[in-house]
Length: 316
Image (cartoon, rainbow, N blue to C red; front, side, top):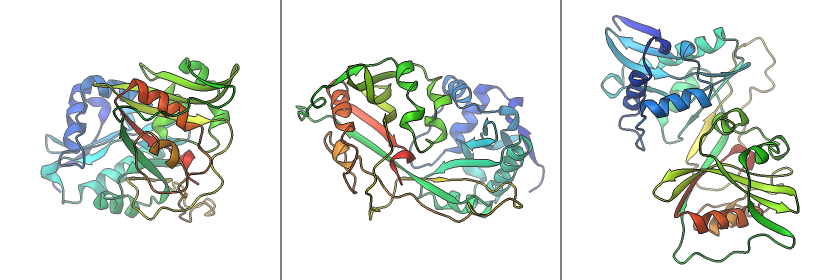
């Protein structure tokens, strides 16, 4: 295309980038309005390097954006898109190539991103660029019944108590045998504003915790839900389609070993019984995550609506 340019996002104000980010999600599966304040928070908490985040321009018009977060030799793209009037012209391939090149130049050896499975065009773009499907992410949303269904808040000597996020996050490594996705990993959680927590306690010991943020109108968003020890050992693959999948990693150096290059998907674990106890629906086994019931019940008593991404550590 004539006069197609790639420009670093650092050349633009956060107001301009927030507007462009919002427009690249036009006609998407859900609204994605991003304010300058949210863009500022996003850049800070997810370590987005604006100098390495390419903006695609046609003439004087900004038509695409890919955000590149960097942590050591890892990179992650949280926002990728082309504005509606310029779709269908192959520009996504140019933007993806620019994103990968910037990650390489920054020293990244792996790049990850999240994509809805039903976003078939985006999936094809990423696969064509060399990414592969790595593991899957489930999302839940549920509302509190009226009146709430009573559930026990812990068993025996266990109690559900308010916990400072910093104390919960001190247990992060022990509670995450499988690394979480980028925006639920420790570097992000440590920087989130208004983070609150509940813990399942035995005496002074933290057995499990949930960290969450207010989301307005009585709703909250769960940012982390974890317990001491590994995930469930008995699983099966649900027959329904996942709401969201994760594409990663990118083989950034073809000369390296190809042992990790073969695609694999992690099978669904089991928050089913615990989540179903507060009104959510999801198929699958119900083994190994009883700890979540008292935590979710405690949240249900305080908040009308809860949304959560069940992270890959719940998958196997």
